[in-house]
Image (cartoon, rainbow, N blue to C red):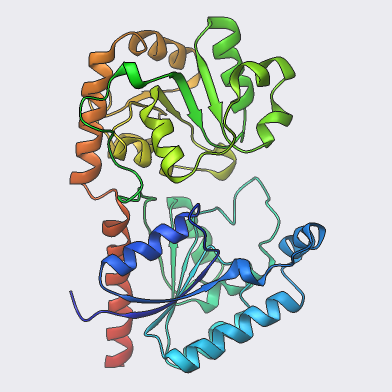
Length: 352
């Protein structure tokens, strides 16, 4: 196990961010976390925020990097952990290394993906300056090494045990008023896919997510399917509980192998109908712990099979929950793997 670490943890922190969940996991594992909230270093003006996000430049970036170094000098952490942090300057990482503080970057998104998201300018420059990169795609390992990364490991996204847990004993379809449910973003062809499930087959589709759904659904589909806006924390968990079928899509434009939503649904003991992928199939036994589909027609077939069969859904959901707990799909186990790799870096540095 080793002694607890002091970790300078810099990220955007809010109760709705998975980065907050990883902070909680570090604390549960006994480590001292010194947080800096990157959201405090963004412009208040909405237009300036968009420009700032695209360019990652300006006084906000300079102030964040100054403060990181000031806190590091004052607190003397064992490790610097940047979680989905785009505003870090390479020279900051070099100065931390000179202070004897190794650095790790945890990046859930795909900096090399075909979506060509903005905001990666500084992050791409940072890649050779981190001691360790945490990614969630096999492809990204080669991507990062090709950009000069010192070390890269793959980790899976995870559920948060204090947020994602099963419903009360005796929960049943009497408490499930969401039929074929999707809670999440409107990436890829999801609006058309879900509209077809409703329009062509009459399935009781319910969508919750951000306001982009209002732009991407037709007015008729939006009025019929979209409800409640974004769901977080208790509302998100209860949304899963209240769903007979919980859909989980891969974000193809992000080249996902699996998605954190699948682990969260399983942890909440929801019935999981997920897009088939090697990543999902390696983590759940098909038709025993989760149900998978490839393409629209198979999704229709699986909905027809399971929507009326409460007993089968209950059995599969319970097995999925048991698998998620047994095989460590929660934050504590996944974060623990990262910490052990960080210990190895610290030991190698001490020995060297």
